[in-house]
Image (cartoon, rainbow, N blue to C red; front, top):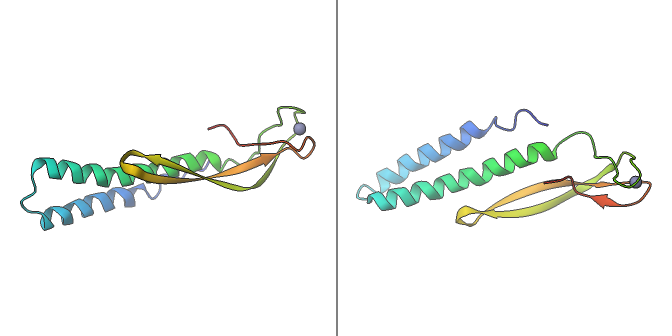
Amino acid sequence: MKQDFTSDWHTLTDEVMSGMKEWRQAHPKATLKEIEQEIDVKLAGMRARMIANAAMASAAEEQPPKCQQCGGTMEWRGEHVRMLVTQHDREVELKRHYAVCPTCNVGRFPPG
Ligand SMILES: [Zn+2]
């Protein structure tokens, strides 16, 4: 498991905060409802990227899984991109390794 997957989260929060400050200056007469909606949209973007970061950290595990049929060690074969749509239609791109057993020639994705 990559330990540093939260390392750029400070950048994410900075972007939300400075973006919100700019938006507020550009919309001095915004209503409470409009402010709430804008914060929701900005947080949704941050949320989507946090999900991708956290999900990819576990997908980056070094050891391939064991084959469920023969118990042998499977091999990583390339990457598979899975799109996940979260709140406010934000798309999260998840890159997953695909594991294949060289003996049985069966493949599977790690759970999750
Ligand atoms: Zn096998």
